[in-house]
Each structure stands twice: as C-alpha cells, then as structure tokens.
Length: 179
Image (cartoon, rainbow, N blue to C red; front, side, top):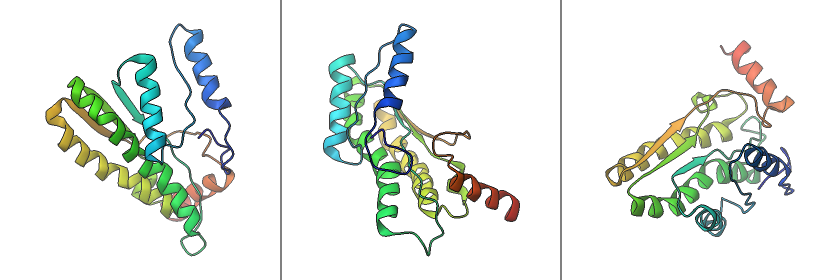
C-alpha cells in the first residue's frame, strides 16, 4: 500500500522514487498501490504488469509490516494486519501470477522471509508470518515445479523502513538477553 511504517495511510512516494530510479537508468517500472492482501488487489497488480510488460517472469513477495509486541499485549487487529500483508499477500500474489507462469512454462516466485521466523522476542506475529512463508514456498515449489515455475524463500538480513526503534529494541533483547 505504500504506507507509513506504523500507519495505514497510503503514500506511494517511496515506490514512486524507486520507479524514478529505475527509469533514470533506462529501465521501465510502474507503481500500483492496491492492497495485495485482497484477491481484487492482487489481480489488479498482476493485470497492471501484464498490461505494461505483457508477461510475468518474476514475482518477488517482499511486502511486510511489523507490530512488535509481546504476545499478551498484541491485539487481534495487529495480528490480522501483519499476517494479511506478510503471509496472505504472498498467497494472493502467487495465486494471481501462477496461472500466467504456468501458461508461459516458466517463472520464478521469491518470497521474502526473515530470520525473525526462527524466533524473535516480542515479534511472534511477524515471526509466525515470515516462517509461514517458508512452508508456503516449499509447497508452492513442489506444486509448480513440473510446470517450469520455481519458488524459493529467502531470509535476507538488512535494515529497512521496518527498523523502527521498537523493532531494534526487540532485536537487541533477542541477541543480548537470549543469544
């Protein structure tokens, strides 16, 4: 959605700045701010890609939100938001793109998991969603492989807009207090 880190307000400026960078070096890119946690939103994203590029060769499911809290303080709305964006969004996008990749007899789906999936203090929602992507990726890979479509999960380590003070504190506790 191109939201602020801790809000649901829509702001496409970050995505647009990436599009501008890609175009500045001769590439082509588009922005679509539809909600990938909905079937209609995912369909719109894939249709936009097909309209502009004519095919879908690579799907990178990198969307994620975090709401760092210990289990006894989190709300149902926080749980739903993190799971919807981080896990359901990957399902929706793979669901919408895979028929195209099957017809093409080629394609790659890359799901961005996280080392948080291995257990991360104060981030059980995010950890569950990101580890869920690993099992999801294995199953999708087994199903789509015979169509020439690959699916992998990666666990990159880096600093992003999710590295809020709250998130960094949960990492410190995980590392220093729990090893």
